[in-house]
Image 1 (cartoon, rainbow, N blue to C red):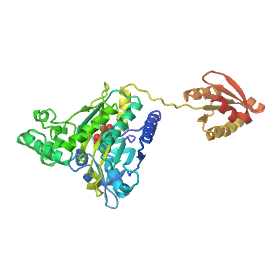
Image 2 (image 1 turned 90 degrees about the vertical axis):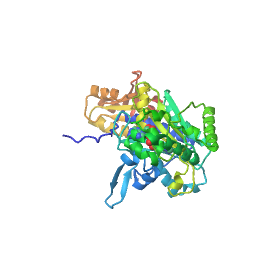
Image 3 (image 1 turned 120 degrees about the vertical axis):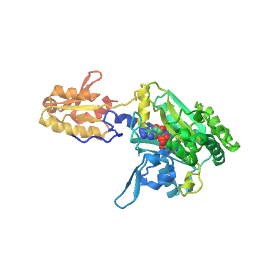
Image 4 (image 1 turned 180 degrees about the vertical axis):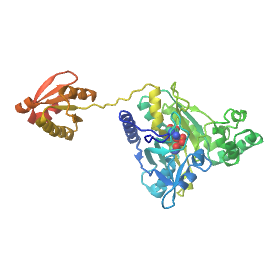
Length: 423
Ligand code: HAM
C-alpha cells in the first residue's frame, strides 16, 4: 500500500493554498498597520523551554509534546506554541534593550501537539500570533485584542464572540487559589485523576477540565473576579474601558482560565458563533504573561499576546459561507501552432513574465482547440495566437476572452501593445 499522510496532518493543495496566501498577506498588512514586526524562531527548541515556559502541569507539556533526542543526545521538542520561544528569543537577543519599546512581534508558522485529531484539531497546525513585550499599559491589552479581531473582521467574519476574564496579579491569584483548594478538597475524590493531581499543583486548571465540567462544584466554584485586589480590578476595568471605546464587544466569563500556565491579568478567547462550526468553537486565545520573561532568565518584563490557527480561521470562513476574493487567473495564454511558432512563443512568454504578467503556454503539443480549452481552464484574460501565417506576416492575434474582441498586433511591438490592451 502507498504510504499515507500522518494522522492529524494535512496537505494544503493548490486551489486551497491560495486562501492561505490571502490570509497570511492580510495578516501581514494588519501587522504593518499595527506596527508589529515578524520574528521567526526555530521549529524545535530545548524541551526545557516548554516545561518552564508553558508549565509542567499543563496538558500540552504532560501529554502533547513531540519530544525526541537528537543524535547528539540533546532533548528537543517540536514547538507546541509560539510564546515561549518568543520570550526565549527576546531574552537571548536582549530585545529589552531595544530603543523602541514595547517590542511588538508577530509570527506565523507550524506548531505541533499530539492531540486527538478531530474537526478543527490537528497534530500539525499553523499559528499566527502576536506578542507585545515591555508594556503594562491596559491600552496594549486592548491593542492585542483589537489586532486579532481585525484579522477576522477584515476577512469578512461576523459571527464572533470575544470572551474575556482577568486572572489577576500574583496576590489575587494566591487568594483565589486557596479558595479553590478549600472548595474542591472535601470532594476531590469525585473528580478525575487529572483534577486530583491538579488540586495542589494548579487548582485553577480544574475549572478547565472537560471530563468534570458538569460536576456541581464546578458551577459553585469561587470566581476569580471576587478575589481580584484593587490594582487588578482597576487594570481589568481599564482594559474593558478601552475595548468599549474601540467598539469591540465582549462578554466577561469568570470561568475562562486558558490551558497554559503563564497567564495573569487579562485572558481572552475569540469564538465563532456560526451555525455548524462544530464542537470546537475557539478560534483564538491569548492573554497577559507578566513574569514569564523573568522566569525564563530575563529581566522583569510584562507581556501580552495571542495566537490563532489558520485552520480554524478557514473553517470559520467556510461556516459563514465567505469566499475570499482570490484572483488566480492567467493574463495571457500563448497558443502556438507549428515548430517555429513554438520557439517564438517561448521567447514571448519569457518577455511577458519579465514584465510582471502571469503567462502560460501549451507544453503537450495540443491542437488549437485543446490549447484554447486549456486557456479557458486557467481563466486566461487574453489568448495570443501565433501560427505559421502570423509568423510570416510578423504579427500575432490577441483575443480578449472576456469580450471576444481580436486585435492584430505587430510581433516586434507585442509586449508594449499587450501592456496597453490589458490595462
Ligand atoms: P492556545 O490556546 O493553546 O494558546 O492556542 C491558540 C490557538 O491555536 C487556539 O485558539 C486555536 O486557534 C489554535 N490551536 C491550538 N491547538 C490547535 C490544534 N490542535 N489544531 C488547530 N488549531 C489549534 C497558545 O498557544 C498561546 N501561545 C497563545 C498566546 C500567545 N498567549 C499569549 N501569547
